[in-house]
Amino acid sequence: MTTTDLDTVHRTSLPSPGALDHEAIVPSPGLDRTASDASTSASTPRSGRLVGIDIARALALIGMFTQHVSISDSDGGFSTGWVSWVFTESAGRASVLFFILSGVSLSIIHSKGSASATNGALWRRGVVLLVGGLLVTATIWPASILQHYGVAFLAAPLLLRLGTRRLATATAVGLIGGPIFLLFARNWSGEVFGAWSGQTGSWLINTIWELLVAGLYPMVLWIGFFTLGMLIGRLDLRADRIVVRMLAVAILSTLAIGALSAQLTEQYGDFSKGDFVDDGSGSAGDGDFNESDTFAGSADDPWNDDSLWKELPDGSFKFLGDESKLEEFDDSFGTGFPDVDRPATWQELYDVTGHSGHIGWTMQTSAVALAIMSAALLLPRAATSALSPLAWMGSMSLTAYLVHIVLVGDVFDKYIADANWSVVEKEWALLGLIGVMVVACSAFHFALRVGPFEWLLKKFTVSNPS
Image (cartoon, rainbow, N blue to C red; front, side):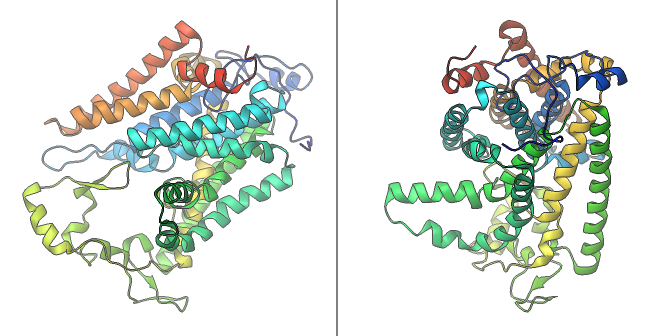
């Protein structure tokens, strides 16, 4: 791998099993980040963890909770205020932060020559996560991201050999080229899924297509988040001046992209609300397809009320209104979604809505993720000490992620979501489940110093793990 001054990471660290995508990488909780520390870090490397990375990852894990639940009461009331904002904004953003941090950590452990960053270890880790993620998807959690991590780690040995410019190019291809490709590729799924009539071959083709193009985390796009993290990981993240600059650029980029998206939406329309269609001539206007048609054909139709529906992890929807009216809905809905192709139109690309897969979203969400990471890295000693339980959870993200699946799928969805409680009571119950995850990871930290699944992952992927 070609290195430059920006690529050089002035640090050493104590090896530990770390997390799904993160090993010990610099200062431990409570370590001062004074100006003198920053000035001496280049000449006198010190051991420890970048605890801010762990804290940022813990925030991503909490975001996994809020993006995978929907809270409402029996009267159709929903969360409001800042709580509603958290639920909305975490969708499609917590997982991006998770992915970017994995790239950051990989670059750092590779720069140290860690045994976990050898080609063999990365390939074995990729296979374990790929197979494990597919099993999780098939059995308990349709929205699993683990198999996509597997694809990223399988590609990691090649990516680590790229110089900074080529890695930046790969990032641009993913975050800008990916959304453009997906505009066209989404209408190819029918042909791809029907390309093989045999059961085994069909499953293989469909699985590959879902991983790379048609799933919740299409890797033709999401690999860009991973390589962006790898680029950031080549910076000296112990130098406050670098992290402060990154924070400033990230905040300004978030605001600028949001303002540009709003301006373009005002001028050209909001595709997600069916304000326009592309009639094939490249201009917005009336046409055969309107995305609002997917719910009974009219943007004014009462069935288009988003408060009536909860999107489940597998992409299906649960009706939250009066179930006695579902028969009426079935009558108005006809035989199902309209059998039309959705034309590719450039106006979609400026959309910043969570999980939209559009350029506006990839750019703004990346900036938000870097802002959160930068802010976490700049936390003072008192704050990092107080947030140690979050850091412990972030250091064992594979274990925490699997615990989150159990708590959401087996506890919240089964016992809390449909309980006859008020919205506020359900919000407190969700906060309690997040607390359970933090406490469980803290217990693992004190008992084992590492998450059990991290220990197993390292056992199976690293030769002679210490």
